[in-house]
Length: 248
Image 1 (cartoon, rainbow, N blue to C red):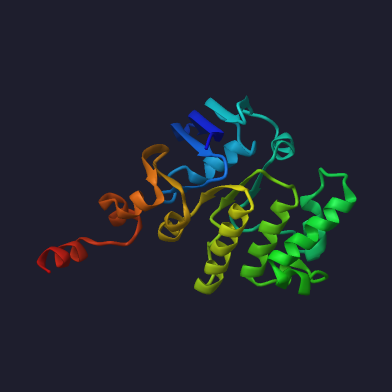
Image 2: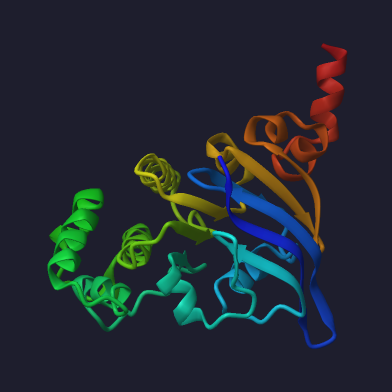
């Protein structure tokens, strides 16, 4: 596999605060890549910089070998990168169908748009059942499905997802991660930011650990799952558990 997305020495400042301090990583085409780390580590900022929502203060972002650093968010979507934002951010006073159509606002291929709406409904049958329902009246899990479906309407080659499991019940979280695997199996490259490090690393081909704006560790998903520091910091393994293992 070759890198479809390459982040090189990327820095982002918010006023006097340096949110990213020169991180570098590759996203291989067709892979699931996850960024894990504590709150404030710079994970969401990374996605926002790639999406054109914040302007980097240094470094480069390359997509399919072309420099897209600081490019307008609209052009980023046109090129094939789409994001599912943290907190879902559906349009509450619009219907499910209207939200999906907004995801296709840059497209003019009406027949293909209709086919892609049906594709989203096949992926999320509950959205089809509620297609005339106002998005604000959906459950949290249904809103997350809608946010994913809306992003898919832009026909992305790379789908970025910011905390897709946040605030959802365990069964719904499983459904969302199953959906990520289905989309990846269809050939979509996934860049996933996720607090649920255990679930994210289990499905990821590659993972990167971010700490206070720096990329401090990387490896395959399985390697990071087994890493002692990762297990203690992000997978809930405590010193007492380690001591019990030694005593056993």
